[in-house]
Length: 246
Ligand SMILES: [Zn+2]
Ligand SMILES: [Zn+2]
Image (tube, rainbow, N blue to C red; front, side):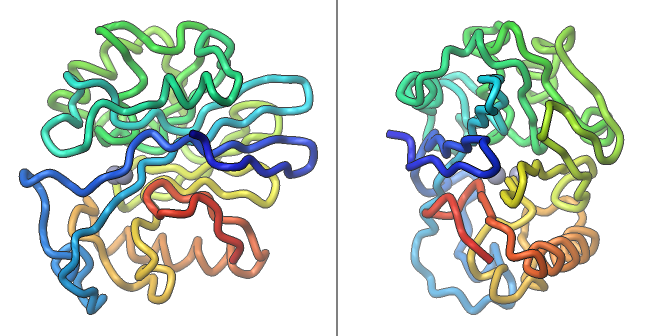
């Protein structure tokens, strides 16, 4: 079931829990190795995989991230497929065909795979918003099985933009070159800007699967400081609780 929505300035933000589970053996590592310097105990890291549905006052729908996809998705090598995004959307009263904008925070398989289903675009009437730098870096199954399928619907941007009324994206490179976060009022949907609560306590704690650890650390530190200064509400992809007031 979706988590409880919150409403900010007349816009409803509903967390959709696509999946919960540990990483598969293909990429699983002890938490202290995934997050060097964190001192995390050697207990399995159970990730949640959250997407966010935004419904504005005019009933326009925007989806931020699309989850891990089906049993045949590019994430199937390591994530607990199949994702339950379709059921979560239905429970939130949203038909995939009603979604006008899909923001892909980045083109990793656990965020982009649900953009397609059975080899076709899952959201037939949507623009899929992606940063140019991530598009240029895409390769392998995410390129072949996701990006290529949604090619005609891509809205490629560079930097910051308003992608739907009241929905802004900000380029936050490091985890991937074209990583972006999405903002609605005081809510910040942060994708993989921050993976684990240990990085809230210390933003300098890197993540082993950041593409560019140095850039990711600098971006995370700066963006978190700015969000903290405005006491924003974090809406994370992988924490257990979707919302967190800074
Ligand atoms: Zn990622
Ligand atoms: Zn992720």
